[in-house]
Length: 276
Image (cartoon, rainbow, N blue to C red; front, side, top):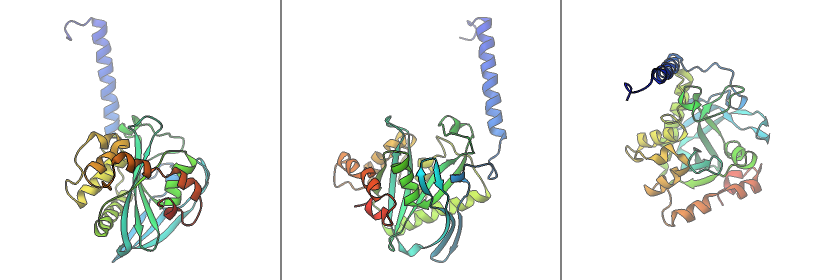
């Protein structure tokens, strides 16, 4: 108990408590901003305009990579017919060999053969590295990267050497479209009202879950598999969002796309080839 502690230990506890209060107070005082010195790959945010069935997006990322850290930047303006959205896809990218931490993102297929990836990420400043603890302390703003799959997927599979798992979501086109629209509205809102990334409450996976549950309330229950996103594909399988006609272990084996991504590389039909 506190009363049984030595004066020295009580002083140390008081110092640590005061330090924790100072850190917490500082974290609460800082405000999210969009005008920092961002890394080049996160320097621009999507500018989204809806007109009927057409959405026009400025700053669609489509970089040409030489290595994971060296690229030719290319930001594009693209228009998409939302009536052509026919599928949604879920990517899981584990971090290293420890199953638990992972990055997740989604992609949307259109009947014209294009695929649009939407990746919720921690927006880093130049010189910053991502760390999950820093993600709890308001170190990063939240950003939505909207990009061509040859950028967003290939960066991870072909240049960073991460394992990339790809799953088709079992949903009808109308809900896939609604999910894409919801994510794009949030991406646009962040341009005017920036927010902080949070490893637990506002991460890649928790934001995807929030979008899904806005489209289909309570579709995704609370689970530790959201906090440990490398298990999020298991959760999606368990609640019927993925193909359940085969055992999950077999589905996951088929979902690993690295060999196909390496073979497709910069091919124009990259997205089709990673799905064969």
